[in-house]
Image 1: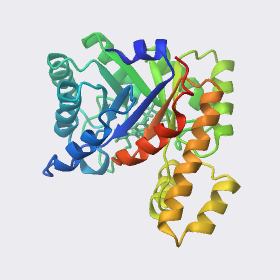
Image 2 (image 1 turned 60 degrees about the vertical axis):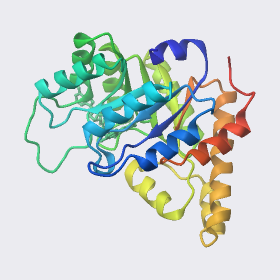
Image 3 (image 1 turned 90 degrees about the vertical axis):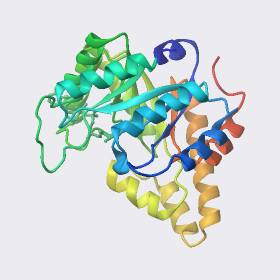
Image 4 (image 1 turned 90 degrees about the horizontal axis):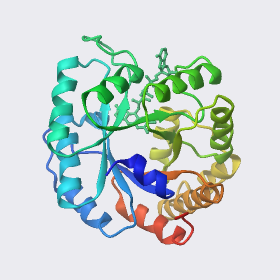
Length: 285
Ligand code: FAD
């Protein structure tokens, strides 16, 4: 099923998983999938490249989720440093396996760029559309992409991605809902009418917090700083407080009728379960 059709019908709830690294076994991710089974999840996204995973494992995991777990899936695909023929053959493999949803990304710029067939996600989106009947999502940044010189610049480039055929957007994680609501306003002002799924990561330990701040540069509200200060030496209390904080964010977003919630669960299904248990009944049909 195409994700845009799911979004037309309900406020979605989805989770992101990352595949095993190149030579690692699939045992852990199978355990994760077994534990996600039965939860009210609309789709799973499978990252590419992050943490040294290979494109092969991204596609292999996507196939497994779809065929063995009967869950809808969106496969991430980055284009920087890729060749056009590589992308075309990957899209063929996806078509053969009925994988119809792709998150079209540029990827972070590597230290050495060998192939320059693609510069931006906006080069990849029309290509995917022309090579198959795919539903295409793209990334967006409520606090702007770190390389963008301004919010206005970033929104203009985002508008270009939607004009080129991107069907919906998934946001970078944020800890301050005001940042997301302000972003929605900028989209409305710029006449970008695409659905946007809000990216939420339950922060469950201090090391993870430091990593996400480094990666996303997101604003840290005073309430969140207080939680960290209070519980940084008590891992189990910090985990509980981090999950409670994420639930609070999600309830607020759902009450503001966001199009969907995309949860960065770091392959930890128990966190998705705890969150879902607390929001049952809140979702718009
Ligand atoms: P783009 O949309 O190409 O934008 C990159 C920058 O260029 C922005 O500053 C933008 O303003 C500017 N820009 C965009 N288009 C143009 C244009 N036509 N001309 C000039 N400037 C332009 N990374 C991975 O490696 N693997 C993953 O699986 C992965 N999944 C992700 C999932 C989500 C939901 C998000 C939010 C990010 C993910 N990333 C992943 C990280 C992503 O690859 C990086 O943030 C990367 O730096 C930008 O990718 P993008 O597709 O947003 O780039």
